[in-house]
Image (cartoon, rainbow, N blue to C red):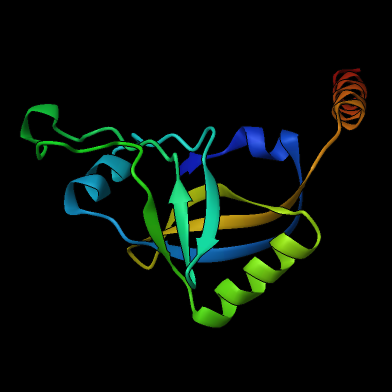
Length: 143
């Protein structure tokens, strides 16, 4: 079951490689995600000190009046990956100028997972070409 999808990432980036990661969450964040209250727009993944973090992912409180004081809905959340996977992602992203973006949040065996994409940014012309291609395919389907 999918809870959130980063639609903008598929338009802004060319996804080269995908990877599944767990997320370190608090209990009320899990309830908020399962109720569909998560936004991945503008979020990205950073690897530092041998760990990966999900930044700017917005998880509004499940019960606003029952949330701990000082809760930041866009706090950085640690991703649960093996050290080798983090090193691999870090080396690939630094060497060839690639970006790590979260693609979707879903449940796998009752655990919340994030699909991370190793992506290359698209140029404005590539985006226009993609829109033209999609419009042409839409016209063919409708005809």
